[in-house]
Length: 111
Image (cartoon, rainbow, N blue to C red; front, top):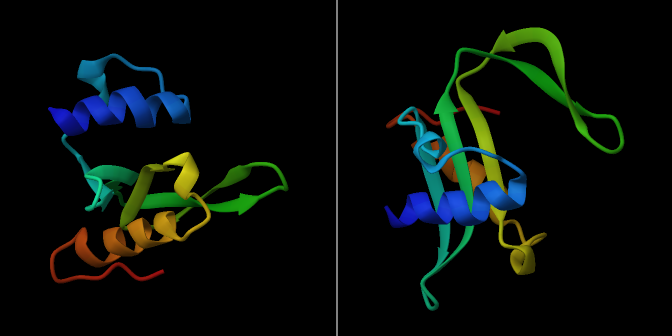
């Protein structure tokens, strides 16, 4: 319950996701949360899910664009968020690394 409230009140709001609380949590998603143990505070969150295909992302200068050509994929990242004061410190990179290494037990997802 606490993680769901954190996700809807903080993560979804800052990322611009608009949905009802009961729509916010999909059981197909897995949450990876970076926590500051000293302060018991969430510093970042990644919502991931198993997928079969995806369009490769590219950056056109200001935003990411997904290719219409689909490629085989295993891990999809739905949301990734880091607390504003802790951005640009590698937290998002570590969340993705953890998701790749631990999402599928015994099978690290390659780049």
